[in-house]
Image (cartoon, rainbow, N blue to C red; front, side, top):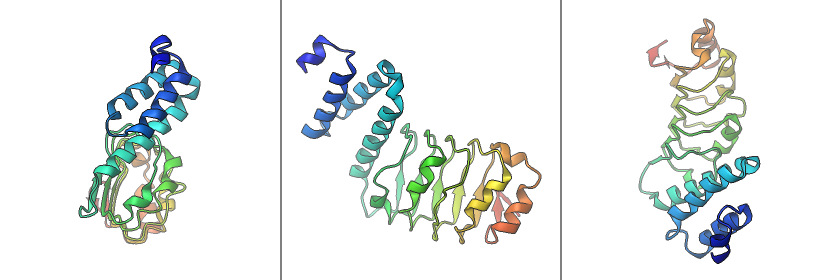
Length: 199
């Protein structure tokens, strides 16, 4: 820590301090960890993707620490997540809220362990495609409101989620596509609600 006092903006000392704090006492240094990561994102923009993913990993670890298996839902909203970690710990959760993060389509395959998930909220993220969406056999309700999905054809990637009854694509460019309803009826046979309206 003395070295950090001498060079407060040194990316190497900042990163080392983050890793040490996590190794020594994760709970005690929680706030300091995210403060240092924010500083790293600012002083080293070329590696900001790595630091944001590290942020996501720690945020999920803290959330999972608080999660009780007796609960059937977990709130992971508003955590500035850019990727998903440790989803295998959530394999029995029924409702997962990932709204208001920075997730993209590259995060979708990481949701595969959510095999008991019935309600999945992915509202207000940066999801541009549904390619890579895993087969989630228990999923009934999927909200993708306020993302950046541009093509109605993307709904084809939801075909393997065979128990879907409601899909919300409101406030996506694809929601304005006149073919959306027809594509949903053709490829998502179990869906009865689209954008909060009955089909």
